Length: 258
Ligand code: HH2
Image 1 (cartoon, rainbow, N blue to C red):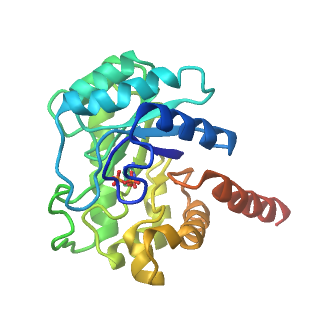
Image 2 (spheres, rainbow, N blue to C red):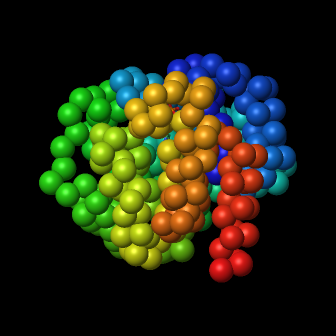
Image 3 (tube, rainbow, N blue to C red):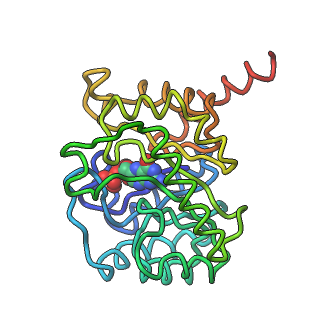
């Protein structure tokens, strides 16, 4: 899953493709590099980020969706707002990636009425304050139980199992130790029986581990992509598609030899 942030303030690529034309060019490049799916986002969810109005989010995202109709891969939209979901589904989005796991009133029903896929992500708190002091008794069990409950609510609300994927939400209300515990035991989340998405690309936990700024976290991001797939992730959400594909091709070659 290649990341296309149409924002001025995303933590890594904020402002790099904030207008529709450059975002579309960037998205096409990610597809040429081998992305199977694109995740278009109009609102940053980095720690400390303020929410934006639905109108502004749509102003950013809709022209990009319209420009990507013929891009050849499905488009996911990263949003938590039902009014944004409704509009992007009409503009061809095939999946909604919701960092709040369809918590907003009306969000679940909106997806149930559509044929779209949905990614349900775990987050403790909200982006403005989530990194202040995240606390868990058992992070893996709590995240697993939350995702299981949200998936069950979606199924009960009319969203077929096959349309659902789960994401533990690395970096969303989690310390480095929480993120590492979730990565080490990602197979516990995969055991719920839904495809798992993992998003570590260039995140600050990698900065804590390697001492490097976001621009220099490619090697760390590739290492985590491999580890996540080895532990059961079916999809990785990344900024660097070509390099990630190469790393995963090596992993696949080794696994088919063993
Ligand atoms: N991470 C980010 C945003 N959306 N969605 C899912 N499902 N999983 C993630 O790990 C995830 C996500 C944050 O990364 P990015 O989009 O690059 O930054 P920003 O939120 O600052 O736009």
